[in-house]
Length: 189
Image: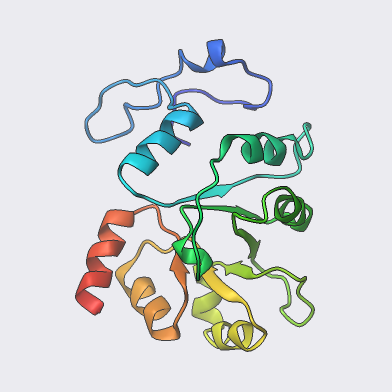
């Protein structure tokens, strides 16, 4: 979505990837190679930013991505809401979320849901409904809270949606526009 390349990523080496232009889509227009994940982690830690990391499934490598992430992510103690963790893994794959919870119980996992009924949800601590579902079913937040879940909503980029999330009491907002959302949260609160 953000480079001049197409096709599956899993079959490429870093040598292939470092020649991709992953920067000219940005308003600066400057060509840039993709960031290595370790570089992104370093930037996040330097600037004290939290990261939500989504793993996609199914993939030919199965659960290898969660195992690799488990080795890469540092142990950073935190207490309280999963929204306060420096890192969170999120996935639409329940198997990936459960795998992660066994590999790294110190780093929260968010089970992303879209159309799944919430009557028989698995034993996880954080559920991530999409903003479209919240617009259709705002009562879902209370129902999830009543079942003991934190609610982290994706992908919240519009002002009205930020306000909806705040009014419903979600614990975290996942956005492509974090700067704008933080500014709105400052105005709302």
